Image 1: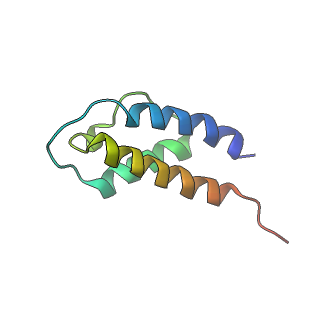
Image 2: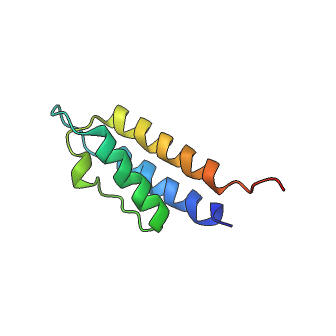
Length: 80
């Protein structure tokens, strides 16, 4: 049931992951935590979170994929 909300949120996360680029370094752990927080709340945005500023598009896309993968794994029903 949670997957119904995670999949659309994942698309929104991937959209903002591909916007903007900077040469400054950002904190990947904080960025991934923010992405995960947005996925869990279902309130995602196409804008790059402030905490993710300075992280390259390639790294941001990787972080988004990792966060989505973790959320999908958590959403799988447990076998009895």
